[in-house]
Length: 221
View 1 (cartoon, rainbow, N blue to C red):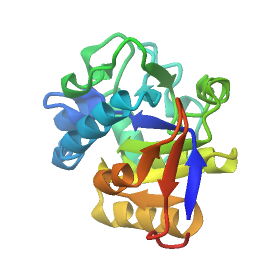
View 2: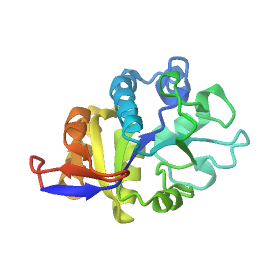
View 3: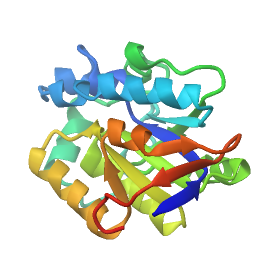
């Protein structure tokens, strides 16, 4: 079956603090190689979407230097790992190198930067307003972490009425098990999971902003 869609690409949290050598996650001892492995696919997707004139939204996770928006200011109950990260090293503080997009994925002037303070790109941001202003009906998700910020954003998108596509080779989690679980949940309950080649091989431009997506081969459709 072929669907007419008006898509946008979302690139979640590809920032120095998470995915660059010398960033906060690297300093905290996390293996960021899985995050960095997504860069070639995301670069390819980004270039292709620009060629097709598909809107691109980068999310930028930010924390204030004062700490006013830190999770421990609003939560008494926090998982140990998150609490330890907060205490050891604030991540992606506004105005720091840590908070900037990685050098491999610099945004262009006509891209949209969504600054967020929580996992979902929808939470207390302009994202929904901007999507509706552009008439977007389908969101293609890439970035990190698949099982946390990408999944939170994707679920919010679905529950707000957008169709969703998770680009499997352009997302990654620190946990392989969590990554696989997210892909299964998306396939069974929310939308499509495709790798970047599958996506663009099945996406055909049929108008200025309108595309045809052939989904016959994908599970559950």
